[in-house]
Length: 375
Ligand SMILES: *Cc1c(COP(=O)(O)O)cnc(C)c1O
Image (tube, rainbow, N blue to C red; front, side, top):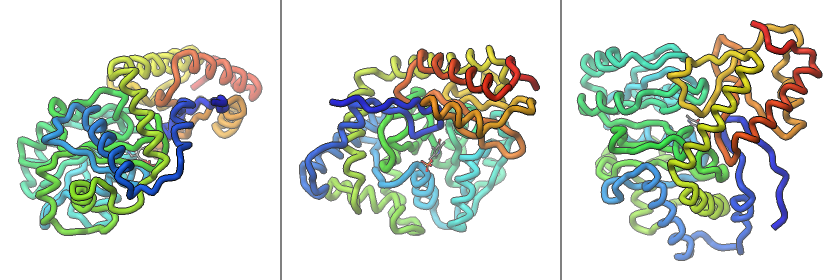
């Protein structure tokens, strides 16, 4: 097996993959309607539920062919009964995406907004639930990837349940990294895609949730044909297959990625991501960079960094210099603040981050940006 050039991706997914995962895509051609392929998907779905400690009698994983946003779309459009309302606990770009999806489908919704650099006020969440008994679904984002802020999902889920609502969480940027337990965390539905925490490739996304609620949703208005949760679930139950063509090669790669996940282990993997994140924070501190999110609210996977105040600073030029050296950094996603992001996803470890900061120092030197950086 020939080694593939290794790039260190510090963007919020797709993430750096191992060569074994890359090469797992190279398989004999197969029609995905063969029983052999359905068997692979069965194991895959069971593993996806196991990662979040779901009881397989209660929870199931439904696969889709698409990027991660598809999961948000699927959950919101499929799980809302007629005449009821969605509550989005919104403190960032990804919860705003959920609001945009509600708008696109014309779903009645409440956009309960909080500052992007703060955890939501739970008293206000509760008050909203109390005043609006029409709320049937509460949605939020676990790690707001736009800022790296961790949301208190266990507490929000408990409130949702106290007021009889279903709780859906966008765990795309925590799944298979920061440990999740659907029971302990009060999650009815969570979601992710293969190219983030699992360190596989784009094209496979999945919703993990309660079978009973999916079965109930058979009677809800069908607002999408391709992105309907019950239809896809029902097809899996009856045939073991995706309704339409699955992302064949990504599924092979993801099966390999799962082997590597279990070999590293939940704890070991989270410890590695934590090492990477700590190395990122240390490197930023040494250069004088300031992060947006206060330490105790960070999800430990995304550092959101303010641009320094230096006439020679140019994000694009810094990006290009790092890119030429094999490191990809990413722009921020906060309106009204100039930021960039460094993420701890992927098959990388602390020495990769140390190498990145050596490269970054070189680039800053070439551009004449003063170090430590000034604000
Ligand atoms: C990456 C991500 C998504 C999905 O984005 P796609 O570009 O559609 O893959 C959704 N939610 C969160 C929180 C994410 O980090």
